[in-house]
Amino acid sequence: MAPPPEVLKDLQGDIWPGLGKSHETFFLFSITKPDDFKRRVKTMVDENKITTAEDALRKRAQNRDPHQAGPEAGINVGFSPKGMQTLKWFSREDLGRGNTLTNRQFCDGAATLALDQGRDIVEDYEPWMAAHIKGTKTIHGVFIICGDKDSCEKGEALVSKMLGDSIEHIYSLKGSVRTGEAKGYEHFGFRDTISQPRLDGWDKEDPALSLPYKCRPGVIVMNHPGTNGFNEDVGQWEPEWAKNGSYFVLRKMEQDVGKFRDHAKKLAEDKSLGLNLKPHQLEARFVGRWHSGAPLEYFPKEDPARDKNGPQWDFGNNWEYKEPIDELRCPYGSHIRKSNPRNNFGQSAHNKDKSLIMRRGIPYGSDYSEATKDEKRGLLFGCYQSNVMNGYACIMDRWINNDSFPMRGSGQDVLVAQPIKGAVSESDKTLHANLYGLDEDGNPHALDSNNEPPAHKKKRCDFPGFIKIRGGEFFFNPPVSFFGRMVEKL
Ligand code: HEM
Image (cartoon, rainbow, N blue to C red; front, side, top):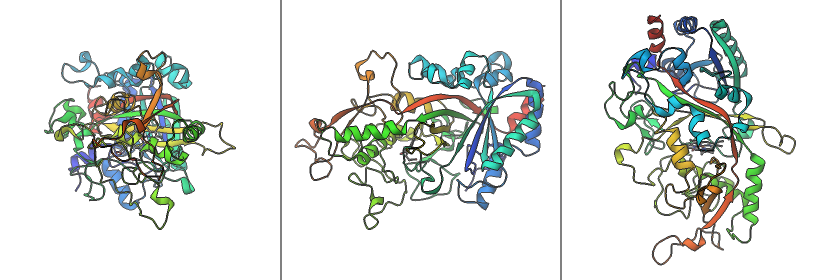
């Protein structure tokens, strides 16, 4: 099954089904001549240079490996709130009441809330980001260029040539999937992009991967069933012209791999905690999966991939937390339990999928080693959703950074939480994970006589924060039909 042909032609392919890539360039630009820009980008569409879902499906049929790029780059485009203003496609004055994008988080931009909360630190921002928030070089949009190294370079050259002096190139963020044994793994050493929502009626049914990740397409793509919880697919929430668009969140997240490993070692060696965990077992508790990707919920003691003769995990994703109140196997503060609580808390069945996001990140920088430890590395985090408030902002602000989610005293997300500069609330002064180790036989602790996890065995582990946000923005990646409408208004 696939979406109707008119949707396939209108939807940009990176949103769904995704563009094949071993390399990716985020080409950030400012619009200098808006009318000229509109005409030129429309020419790109007419010459088939913006990759639609239909094109992406065709490429996929020829090549099943998402890390393997075809000979030609896939190119998509999105606009920041300031970019939409520059295109005169934003404010009520420009478009009339009820006809502009509504999402407050998008309108505010990525830095606003994070800086207000003291989570993003201006001093951590790279120069292109600092210039963006100061307004000296404003990012109006991003071309997302996916391919191999060569095709990404050609894609960049093509964008520059076709848009000429209607834009000013600000900066290119470049990522590439890791190679050899590290292929498919992020820099902390964990297999990544295992869990991804399957769009109901669009993606092929796959019993291993479907529930609970079957997600209404409108959770990711605007104005389809599921957008903001609604089940109808017409003109609700976002204006009619935005149908088949999606909000794209791009954040450059630098990972401190040395600090991450050293800290796991320090906690493992801390006799006062007595967790009875080796460093790799602690690291797995930070993520909620073992390095191989096997979930702790099913394998709380050891990574099944370490023992070729032991029980093996097939990397399917069709599982839930067996006893939601039981954190003895997988801590509440683990990254995957924070960012997708699955059956963990009382979301209505109807809106269970409301905060799912389509992740499209790619690592950047060199592999960590003794020789390269001072170099920079991390994740160019990207995700799509039809509502930033329900997607990224909810996950980051209400779940990952909140020590009371999903339960009081859960601790923050060890992998991604950001400390708050000058925090006043006790719970925010230090980042901490409250977690259980293993008993002296190397098994998860047993429930107590009241059938509850034994609270006195749960240990508070402080951690310093292992990522730094170097920059990024929220974008609106419009439907392809948007470009036709833009030139009609000229
Ligand atoms: C440097 C930053 C990050 C790293 C290294 C990282 C790493 C990982 C890893 C290793 C997994 C498990 C594999 C998988 O299921 O795909 C994962 C899952 C996930 N991450 Fe992240 N992540 C980062 C940032 C974020 C952010 C900022 C968000 C959202 C705001 C996020 C949302 C998710 C979600 C939704 C899942 C799937 C959880 C599930 O369904 O079980 N991640 N991430």
